[in-house]
Image 1 (cartoon, one colour):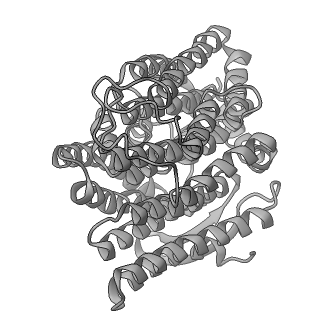
Image 2 (cartoon, rainbow, N blue to C red; image 1 turned 180 degrees about the horizontal axis):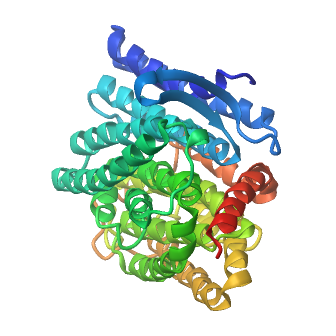
Length: 486
């Protein structure tokens, strides 16, 4: 699909599907089918855009119209390589997450399906926005469906997890809003293409606070363990695999290009924070007593790897960071959905209550092993390719940082091998009552297999992502280093 309407359709279609789900007097089964078909249609549009995209063509599929003329607001959307791959990631992951929710039998399906579609619409909007105010609308709009999905369909401690998530997010968003208003009033417009750069460290840190919380980067991750454990598994997967990318995207799209001087001057601090988070959260992942805990801390560690690739500020590291976003997104959603399947079928997620699931369950064992090995970043896997690029970018300028970051590969092997062993092979100390009656995968495979196929496809052909983002990353990094270097 080509044309200026593509970027708009990508967020309008799920929003329209949400309205249909809420308004039309259908049965729950029909509402679920409409919502699922809507997400599949959105994925089709995104994949069509990916095939039509020209890697050397700059920002494409653009629309720009005056929104509120008096204060310089515009409706300006479009996609470059960075936006394209993250929109496609979102469009692929949401149908799988929604399919899990339908399989798990979520109550009040009309509200549930509509909230999932609204979440997709908001995430896509922020990825295609080329106006700071429009980006902020998408960035904040995510909060409402996420908070409701956690507080209504979450675990026993969902109220505390929701409040913590809201407080963290609002603090960061308020700081960014101050920065957006300041930049917009100075420039007389909020259109990204007409806003100049700034040397204000305070404004740069205001934007970075919002993005670091959303990512989440250490030490701004305090909301993560509770939210990832208490949210429904599919929502945890989207939080980790898709929503977190809004933070990393914001760094590359706004924080670095708008504040090249402060970004360049402070990059050593953010590199140090990324390495500390990478190693510390890997160690924390090894200590967790349940699947969700391992995946949660693994996710923070992987986001730290992305942060490292961004702040080494060279083309190789930035390209690796973007590819890592895609790989981590697919694998994180897959791992959380696998954890959810085990929780639903056995009634528990603690390692001491589950185990030995490989026996008589070849389908489950195959997918768990595939996901675990891919997360180990073994040579030949897509995650290996992205981590190799990030580490190569780090070694190019700071060999010590590259050496320290390389230790994370060893730590990842430790916690992922422990997870595989605990789920598939170890005998449970206190077996869950549902363990013995659990059979192999059945209909659940329908929303797990697409993620596995995507991971394997990128392992065979990583160029599909790196080719599309390399020009965008070169433009961003060149602008920062040219204006930020003394």
